[in-house]
Image (cartoon, rainbow, N blue to C red):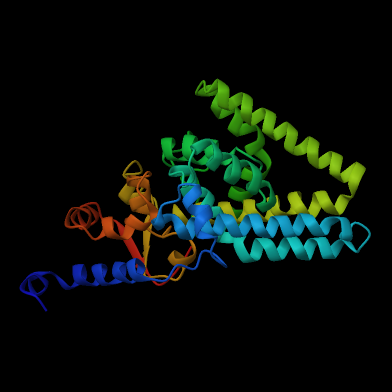
Length: 318
């Protein structure tokens, strides 16, 4: 043990030790790697390989899913359901959702328009999210308003955390029912006219396309390829956001240290691009996901966490 380590308080040594576990952990966000030449051609940095491999795997499984649909058209509906369920279970929650999240903050593919087209528009519908609206809800609304009620539509501030499951059910149902109207209205209030137009067009196309599939193709296609995944993913998203902002200091709700927590040394970080470092993420939304544990253990950050009474827990997930 070095002289510096001997002089360091035990609690600080323990936090550094826990973060080092996340720094050195094997990445488990994907099933199989993508061809190297393809990542090089798309300008993917080596540190983004885990995220890029997840995106590539999603494309492969979606193409397999779509190629089997003609054969499944006259087969029992539950085969379509099982196929979609396997895809989402293997790569969707939480893996692709967090890949979408961090690629929205920091594009991994060049040019950026291709990153957004592939991940936010072509892949997301098959994992339960209407194309293109995640960025508006998360980047434009959630991070700008920072969980402050009533401006952040996904704010947890009005809820009593120990009144479970009523409060969480209300939180999720409000999102599931009202987000289709509240998000466009938020964009209208903030005068984001281009985003407002795009969000309304996407929502209309989402429901119009699913209506067409349900009435003119086969109900099971609409239900199990898009609508049921949307229901399931909305529950997962709201569970995640509710838990991430479970502990909010009512006297200091604008302080990023006191509106969320950090999860350290948990297997969840290995399948979610270190999403457990949520205080760090809210403080530095553009920080690369692989850098969050390293930023956390800098002397400045540890001092700030102590000064602001930040909550850190170990070996659990959301």
